Amino acid sequence: MKHNPIPESLHIALGEDFTEIRESIRAICANFPGKYWRDLEEKSAYPTEFVNTLTQSGYLAALIPEEFGGSGMPLRAAAAILEEIHASGCNAGACHAQMYIMGTLLRHGSQAQKSLYLPKIASGELRLQAFGVTEPTTGTDTTKLKTRAVRSADHYIINGQKVWTSRALHSDLMLLLARTTPIEQVKKKSEGLSVFLIDIRDCLGKGMEIKPLKAMVNHNATEVFFSDVKIPSSSLIGEEGKGLKYILDGMNAERILVSAEAIGDARWFTKKSVDYANERIVFNRAIGQNQGIAFPVARAYAETQAADLILRRAAALFTANLPCGDDANMGKLLASEASWKAAEACLQTHGGFGFACEYDVERKWRETRLFQIAPISTNLVLSYIAEHILELPRSY
Ligand SMILES: Cc1cc2nc3c(=O)[nH]c(=O)nc-3n(C[C@H](O)[C@H](O)[C@H](O)COP(=O)(O)OP(=O)(O)OC[C@H]3O[C@@H](n4cnc5c(N)ncnc54)[C@H](O)[C@@H]3O)c2cc1C
Image 1 (spheres, rainbow, N blue to C red):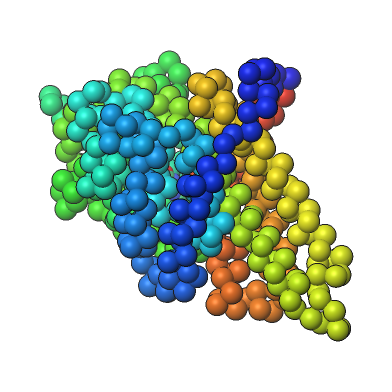
Image 2 (image 1 turned 45 degrees about the vertical axis):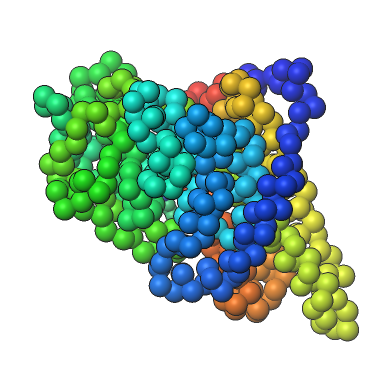
């Protein structure tokens, strides 16, 4: 078993709470109440006003270094922002990718690419919200993805298909993972994949087609089709063939941030449960007096606190540039399950009213279920723990 030990210097570093940022996020979110999100969902619409407000306030550029126009904050600050958005009843799914996708560009892009794109992403002039990895036929088996990018002189030609590409219709740029060397010609199947930063505006109508994909949650999901799409070779990020490594590099940040959203959801559900359990009188007493109501809420609360601690550790390790995969994965597992338990307890606490849309419980309940599937499903996290921490044989 090889769970990474925590360096002594970090033993008590539970992470700052960023109280002022949290207050400011709460103030912003107060202008986007449940009705705002319910109305959007009815129309499958994108929360443009919410995203614009967050962009203008600079919060979506939290992780972009100051030299490129962002505020260069640590990952823990970004986690606090996302947690607070979700704890306020809002949903950051419309814009969270902007926070972590740009990490690939930041760490592996050329100076020219960073100078060209990052300041515009920080100011909101350019939206980098789309991340095209998942494909319909290969699923989690990413190295088998079939989208091909073939180099020819000064450009690449892309052919293939992506699915579940969130926000592609509301983004100017897309980070795309495609195979540049056929799998039969590489030594390791993880080689030969490359990352491209594509300007969607230049490609739409020239072989690139984006179709909305209606889903259980309003995540602005799409299917993206590439048919002989020509992109300049300057779209390549880093070295050709090393793309999977670049994407995997960014996944720990993504896991920590998405888990912060789950923690925020759990806090929203818990508050909602406690308020309702205190005020709803049945059989002449508050329903919260029944342990059958109180205990599931209490259990979910304890599990949320535990997940939060692991995620604080993960964020501290990430910021200290130390391996954080173990904690990022375990934190993701625990946070997604804690938020689901809090959601279940909340729905049950509300009885029939849990099904009434105006309470927002059913919407948040559907939304928080996603964290057990995307960006990585629970089984794959368990496989990581079994293989990489417990050193059990690889299962796939
Ligand atoms: C709303 C939404 C938004 C999304 N946004 C994006 C996005 O913006 N960009 C993007 O690229 N993707 C996105 N995704 C895709 C998401 O990352 C995948 O759905 C997720 O990683 C699971 O992949 P899959 O659906 O192909 O499942 P599959 O890989 O087909 O797996 C199906 C089930 O089998 C299990 N399974 C598979 N292999 C194993 C194994 N070896 N051991 C045990 N269990 C296994 C999985 O855990 C899962 O439960 C989104 C998905 C949703 C639903």
